[in-house]
Length: 122
Image (cartoon, rainbow, N blue to C red; front, top):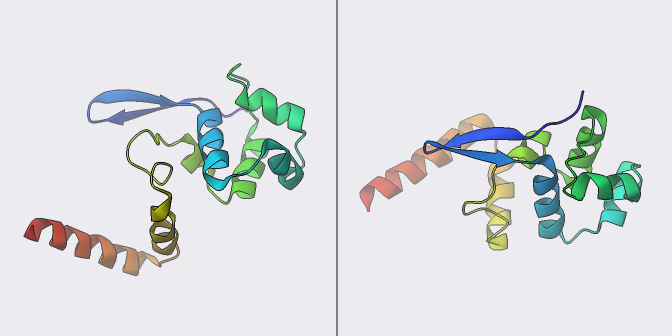
């Protein structure tokens, strides 16, 4: 089984996000080279280049998981549409995102409730 492109419905529009797009964005964000990713995953640089080339060569699930783990993200995160305001456009938000992701579910709900309350007050 291979990872395929994923369709997201965002505000009534369909956005297609390719796995390779997510990997490229994450590599760029982390300042990581493909050869470094190859070393971390055990996947050859040549194979990774094929995944990233735009030739629509998609990795199998096993390689997709290796890539995601090496990048410190989930496979799902690599398939998400990151064209809106995101950590890729504002690297200073990485600390906030990382801190939020490290919270337990109760504290995440607390943060969301606090943000909702603050935005409603404005």
